Length: 336
Length: 277
Image (cartoon, rainbow over all chains, first blue to last red; front, side):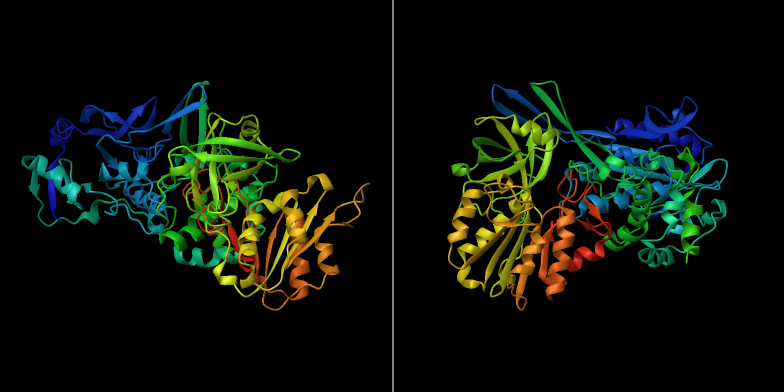
């Protein structure tokens, strides 16, 4: 929809315009030495110089805890109050292209069969200002799963640093256009810019289609047990994953009043599939690890038309026992 | 998808009556507070609902025979936190219902066929809805046979229905108890052994199987051994469920989600799922 440039020094003013338009801004901020998405009041609070936030931007549309209803009892009567579910209009700033892409995975999951109003309404009221990657590390593999350090998919407006003073601003959607048109004086027409020259180099390391093709035949392979021997089932990989969407539902009550919560869950947990009878169809960690890989690289491509992985590398960075997904995928592709 | 609007927020229902079935199993008769005449939403046999016990949580449970012919009720075994809490409730207390969800048992597709039901223990609960539906239309079907197994005579579900079924014309009932016990003069042994003792129709036959995993596997072996094809064997799968609407992934088996694609599958489908039981 158009290409502009914006001066680095104008971002403060852009933030001001967005906020005065009634939107909250989530952006990477440093807290106790860790970079996380958090609400910011002004541009100088935004962290710089990081490869990847520890948690992704998925919390903007799929919070780790969310009340879905409240109930209260009076005598034997029960009254249910629905959550008003009016999300705060939000701009998420500084979303890496991998994370922006993950929003389409989340959208696809929550649109399937019955539309989910909680996620849908948050997606609708969220504007994504992406930030292309100029650096990467050994855990990044976006280009192996159909992404790229400057991929526009999922962003409404994508910023790419093209020199010390300026960002290229690619307008991808109408939401992105409305950000630009809210402060047109801050943007200039971009001339011919060779964006790719400014992006990180992330080499393609495996063939996603080949992986999808190979996986069904490996269902009973001993490799799952080998790879997951050291897995402690902590679920960190799921919690940091931008495209993991599994959730649990729990009721909490003090007797007369209660709430129903939806919260993040992980297929890596032993209790995820535990029947109340004690029977567990995924009773060992190797089956849970197999589910994680199969779901992301075999089932989701078939069911949703998109892999459930965007190559951000967070699971490998977060794993306390150094399970590296890239290495495991390469080993899976070499398995006979 | 059907036009249900309670996918997330339960509808409140009042427990009107509670009936003891067998040990740890009760039937709860419900009236929907906000619906005309308290009547339940439309559903198909083989579908399920998510039932809330306020403060304790929610569980998935199979549905009774059709809403036209019966008072809406849920038969529930006391087996965990939420079902324990349900069993503590009295008539007049409230529960929440979401649904119906899931695909349901085939009906129109199987008209003209012989129908075999094989149930182990409380596996009869989901099958009863199909049995009653078929019985009400029995002129449209061939032979109708029920093979039922239970650990003891006291654990035979729905004895009041069994009494009628045993004498119903055109309905063949075969019952077995695991081990001999005083006062039981019927068959003994696991339910799959009954299939050897009866002249079971094979051609144009559909078989519904419901019960614990070990029983399921033994029955499948027997049925396929008789020559009944894998796509003519139908069962319902059970999974730990949370949302019921295809989002939370707790009930995923391979590419399928038991809550939206199931819970009713043919054995041909079940075989290809992996980690199916």
